[in-house]
Length: 370
Image (cartoon, rainbow, N blue to C red; front, side, top):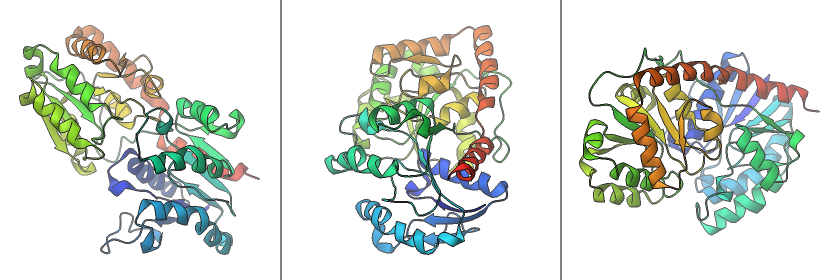
């Protein structure tokens, strides 16, 4: 098929949506589709997808509010003029950008509706847009995609979508291109870090409660299991850094900053355990990647994380620092036999997550659209 794929917003390549965009573009291309990518305004001549045909949004859309308005009211007319060039339009982040109407067959992927679960997550104007403007127009797309059952349930509850109008296509897992290998067991080193990969955003990503929970651990446990926090600074990151500086275990807490994809394997190789305490997620890509690497996990029991974790991860209430601390102790002190069984369950569980299946599902939705 000849597909126009919207990669906006791309978040500078530093978010879960960035990963989604990269993987969907790769897989659609691998399956033989002819792609044209709708990208953010050109910056210094650099291209994230320089091997593809690219259409850039106007320079004046660099600010988010103008980007939203351009997508709503200008892009539909561009699509109308070029409708004979494409067999379908793929919106990769319909919880961020949508059109007021859709002149060609469109799939719109929704990752999460976190704004309905986390008060004050964004500015008042953006919260109004996400709650009242965006849903009205997103539902006009011919096909809606949710990346998890939890996100679909939220679309039915908050957006008032009909159940039959939303298709769940799980995010995937790519094992061949960047050295992803399941380990033969848990690391044998005495020092095995607790890793959390997420942009540093307060309060949504829940770093402060994780640090509170880590601070409650006996010093011997903290010393044996340093807390590695990987991700770029986002909204109110200073609150998170301040909490780490005030922790009695501050010497064992390390912020790596944003880690490029090519360097991620070094980060994963040093992890003995993975913890994912986010208050809300639409999917949780890093949780699946940790399972694939044979790394024992603990995560929140709400949103999609409990759904994606299955019976593989130890789950906890993310709003209770004591519960997080108890889960961390259980995670690092689990008997070896139980840990190996957990790792084995994870290797089976992750087989249901495939980028190839996800991309094929998008194409089928476009083919079936009237």
